Length: 352
Image (cartoon, rainbow, N blue to C red):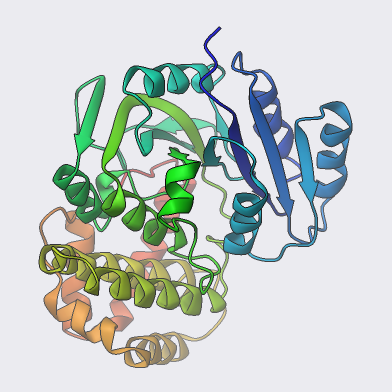
């Protein structure tokens, strides 16, 4: 069996007692055994900590870290404690395929240990796989990107449908990451933190290897932190966009990346509208929803600028329509669109 170094796997855990066993069991079942698992806990109230403590008692490679509040702090605590040669992140309600670690390690050795390896994510809605929603377009079984090609990958992290924007579904060489200070920005908490992280991972990489396999499974969970109706998420996303802008302004090829950044910001605004301000479960009257959403747009100059400068290339038809509604300030029409979105989700339609 190939052994290409230890993999440090970081899994933030928050109120996922129902899903944690599948996540951990799929790691335990890997034929590649040189790994350590860091389970980093927020203050859950559903028994998640007890579930994970059981696994720590079961296997010496599993370690629990308790009372770390926030997704970025959880990932960074794992990053700081990691003792492996490689690092990867998995969300506590998701899972990886049975033999993905050995396959990834074989590819890493074959291509002389690139800085980052990335692969596809299969999304799961109500137990049904959703193909093609967000996927990297390369058709090769394996493809190695070098130098300026990695800068182009960085540009594509600004494109929602590219499928390469998550902190998970990546394996990063830890000595390279520490030499380049590649970890989650400590000013952030959650929101678009994975996009900001991926932007820097690809921009500073010299070699990035794509594997055309669905190794990660993302479980769409309406009650997760990123899906809950919580206006604090607006601040978290705004903070992420501001840090991304700071990153891009320091890049050499910033103009083209900045152009697509405006689109990423607009997608974030649309997500805020659909998931928080105009969500059917939001109890506020329509006038209050409109007022609060207008206040979001006025809260940071990047929102007005992005609405005006957003290119429509790569955008789906529905989001193009919403973009024009934003430009015309017809915010009240976002409410029926949010209702349609929830109607489609309940009937298993997720590919938009």
